[in-house]
Length: 331
Image (cartoon, rainbow, N blue to C red; front, top):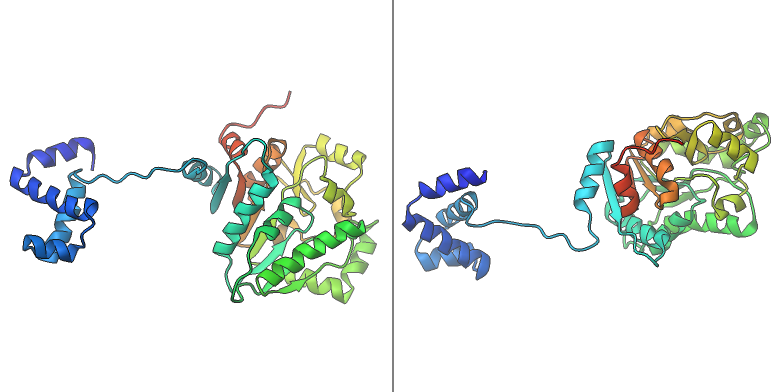
């Protein structure tokens, strides 16, 4: 009801009716009496009390307002969901002097704890410091709520990096009482023939087959240059390969599948050497959660949401605001 219609209704309502509506509203909303108590006190039926409370709202006697606490961005989240046709957006406040990765991880952990389902098959890209922070922040559940946790990309790199990746998959599986599936192969091999040989191995093939069962993806969004953990994973491209992709228009990647700022897949020749979930299989997964932030990743995140690589985004407030603006033109 508009303000003008509120005024018109008020003028057409008698002063005695307005007094009764207001009195009931005060007893209910300010003195917190139950409708049954108001019914007894005013000698009215409970149905009439309920009807008069609704009428008080219609007349504008009772107005409801939602005051968003500092650091909550529901309006910004809704605008992004509408602009990019996303299932859900979670915006984290970017506080100067605090670790953005930890804040993103904490919010992602809460989101997962709230939304994971007993019938979920979760795929996770295991070479992301933000996803490590996410899993570290999660709490264990008293009941089984995930079927499987499946590694989305291989990687045999430095021992420390390999331990972190294995820990990420195993810890998420432990927290959710799920069955873990690991990818015991490099993410990037010398040629297509070696890739096919690895996929023919039973231990590798069973995980690759599990990708078809996925209901939820949990991924980071990579850009250039690659993170230190990514470089240590054994998956990282050479500087020359990264430069070549960047010059051809690539702005980011998810599980080593590269895309431009419009989200269009790049399909470079190096994908023939990759052991990771392919773009087509990824896009068929119903819920695709991307956790990434920082202005350095703005173009990559824009490409990921524009191209539908992710349909749930957890990011920071600075990036979120920029995603509502037109893309920057290249100099």
